[in-house]
Length: 114
Length: 115
Image 1: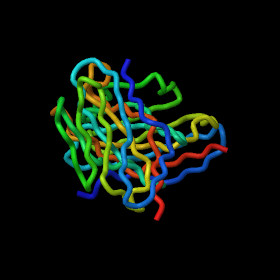
Image 2: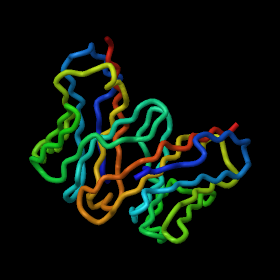
Image 3: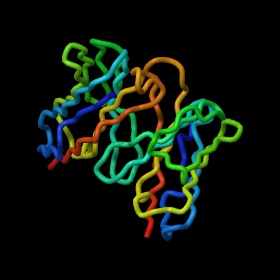
Image 4: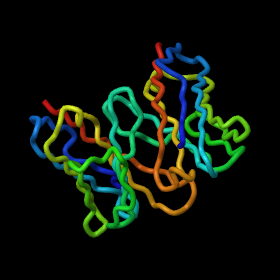
């Protein structure tokens, strides 16, 4: 079956630091990859996505590149802000096992200190 | 576009009682999903609908759980004879399904506490 593995948190950074949150996946087929963000007490919001190998998704200063050779979709941001503090989820859909539904990793909590 | 709305936002119930949650998806979206999220974990798939048809159910969805989407619009998720292990956030999402890479839009969730 599919798997999505994220680095364990929490990740604690100072404001303006560089962020990387690792995500690797195992899936059969040609999944699309997503990053969702969840603020306390809220649902999930789409941050960015990529639908095929070598695609780069970007939004609000965040970026992630779909790397088929390393089965990875690492999230990066050059300079984090306190307002980026949240839980980040890597997810996939469109694989053989999860063709019509989304499969999520366990999430990585980010704390940004002023 | 008012987004996906869920009602209620919070529900506290006694063990053994039945509860029902409602989800109103984005109006033109034909797919509707239910997920469950426990503390510190990612959302786990429960079931999804394409229009009014329930096309897939997870093994997590025991016989005590039932979901409906009459007329392909809003959806309800009912849990009968609740147990403490049912305490979780129940998330609804919708999408305009079909094309590869179509994202799902999530509601704010219903937090269930079984005491």
